[in-house]
Length: 74
Image 1: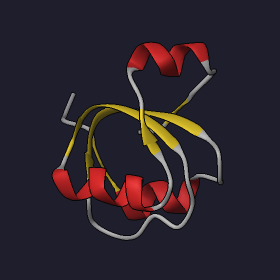
Image 2: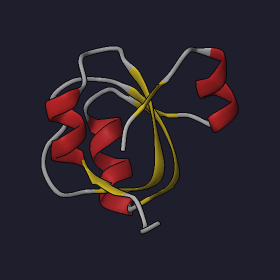
Image 3: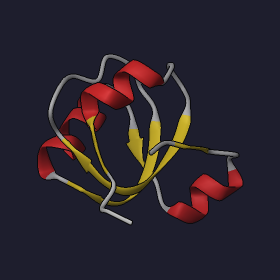
Image 4: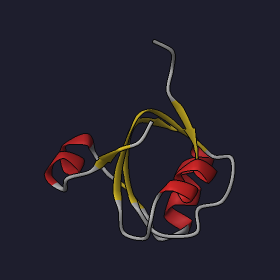
């Protein structure tokens, strides 16, 4: 099984404002996030972190994601 890497533009395309998602790998910073979401992942690039916060979103722990019925994105 290969590494899972998801770009911000993909997250933006497949999520809605206020959603909680889990990426079972690394979130990369290519693209724009146009709405706030909460996201948990194994790792984030620095640019992805910046874009999530800039959009009003939040990086959360996997434990927090479990408690909020997060959707898995891969």
